[in-house]
Image (cartoon, rainbow, N blue to C red; front, side, top):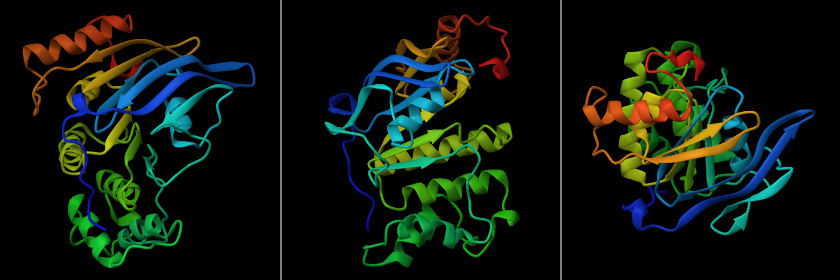
Length: 265
């Protein structure tokens, strides 16, 4: 199974994901209230907002891991009612099987359901190379750094060549230097696969570094406050004037002062 060729210009592509008036509550806590947004095919979209605003809940409803109380989510005009092979998800907490090697964890993504690709081992080698883990195929999770574990999780999500990649704060637990390297690697993967990416983060700098568009969620309850198109050529430098302007704009949307700690996001 080769990596799919997809639209190389998100601005010219149609809507891949449509979230229409989605609300979701857990007992007395309203996580999402009337959320509506769309993501174009091949777009890299980041979702930011304060803790508890429903970012992860929204991502899980797109993945089909959570039902909505009202509203609908469409992928290619089909309503999402359950998880599907068209959507791969990367979790914040790695979610690797400790008894499986790198190869085994990636292979698990192909075996659920049973793999029908003509060369599974070839596909695994392709993915290992894509995420920069050549030479570590037989290593177990306990032998890997945090960044390497996250690469395995990404490779497993990519195994069935999903059209949509959903990432829930995947780099929140790694150090800053590793995070910067993983940003570059993720953008390289996206440039090669042209998958539609929805990336949840509390880190505004991270969102501006990665996204074509940033969806800003408000809390109490979770609603879409604004959408910011990041019109900066890649690669993006955090110290550039326009980068700093975008970060300041999104902080202002969230009511944060310029010196606000990222831990509060």
